Amino acid sequence: MAKKPKTVFICTECGNEYTAWQGQCTFCGAWNTIVEHKVAPAEKTESDTRRRIGVAGRPVKLGEVGTHDYTRIDSGLSELNRVLGGGIVPGSLTLISGEPGIGKSTLIAQAAGRIADKYGPVLYVSGEESEEQVKLRADRVLGKISDSLYIYPETNIENIIAACDSIKPCFIIIDSIQTMYSQSADSVAGSLTQIRECSGQLIRYAKNRNVPVFIVAHVTKSGELAGPKTIEHMVDTVLSFSGERDRDLRILRSFKNRFGTTDEIGAFRMTEEGMIEVPDISGSLIESTESEEGSVVSAVYEGSRPVFFEIQALVTRANVGFARRTAIGISQNRLNMILAVLEKKAGLNLLDYDVYVNVVGGMNTGSTSTDLAVALAIFSSYRGRTSTKRLVAAGEVGLTGNLRSIPSADKIIQEAARLGYEAVILPAKNAGQAGRTSSGGIRVLGAANISDAIRIYQS
Image (cartoon, rainbow, N blue to C red; front, top):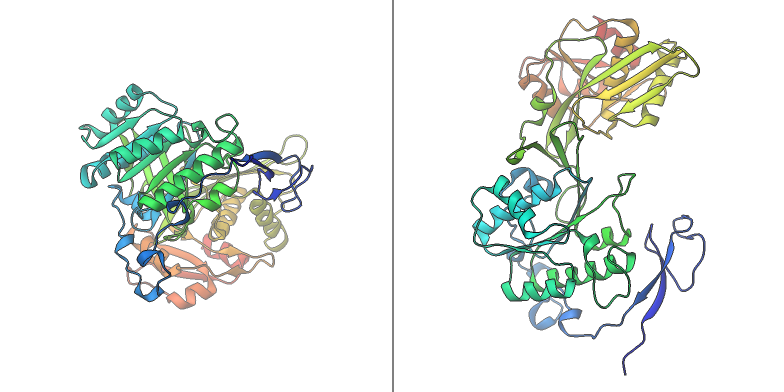
């Protein structure tokens, strides 16, 4: 006798489960996020209870486990490999998200074509576009299409699994998970129930067959990943593809990676021929080589390389009402803190002035290493002064006005020397460790607090 479906209530924000509905999730505190979810009991098979099994399904010694199962697959895109930690791990599940039209499908189509050329059959499952639409994009970004690249416009997950068993692909792409549905779940495609059920089936297939799967996901209006948070916990890697629509630069970031670091970023440039890799991201982000009022170059260390970009500030007297503070590319709260430090510790009276700060190139940096450059750019615009030399500023500004050290300052100095800068302003601790000069002949100037940094900037 078949078992009746079990009904549970799940919070769409955090994934916590309840036996009955309630207005507020006691785990994450969100209101009106708990929805009903019917769990259909599946027949338990031996393959469903195993992932990567050991010898005859028995526990094995960890030291005896071979690493050949984790030989990574080359995606054909070095920037994508960098973000993934060196390539695609067989049996892994990767979730990639981004705004509509940002280039997610173009990026994975290029990766699919190159993997098909090198490793064998690749299945591209399209739930949003027809075969002709995918073919037009492939002709544009791939040129010659491999005979091992298959397209399957389908939204039924059971049919997709059956197709995978038939052609036995070495790589699978699901575009997108919000369009998929399972016959075992009684709800419409894109609902919490369907997304969880389809993701669960894909995870079981990937782990049992040792085949990597890429899942494309939509984002909400706020830019967050659509769907229940439990999917992010289930998958192995979560990638985010971002960029400004009026700019061709695209940044790929990793928010979760079980097989590598989450500090790496990959840079691409959108062109008519598809995504072009940008290995020298610092050189592409900085266009102006002259010192300008309200403009200071800063740097952060992302994964294994320093990234340089220009920070611009505009300070102008407010005409009516309260002064405006606008930040693009940095945190609004961080900008407010830096303005308070400048008023208290550097004597800048910015109460009646509008302040606008922008990170040129569409970069969004969450690092505190840019604090010093933001402060100097605001000072430069407010006083109408510029530095007499081409310099880079990096450092964290504390509430006391002191500058706190930043990681990998030596790598930033070396990259600044390569790009032809004359000096680097760093916190005193970083400057003391690096010495007064570097091997490239660039001057390393240490500042203990924000007042010292302003004095050095003007000298």
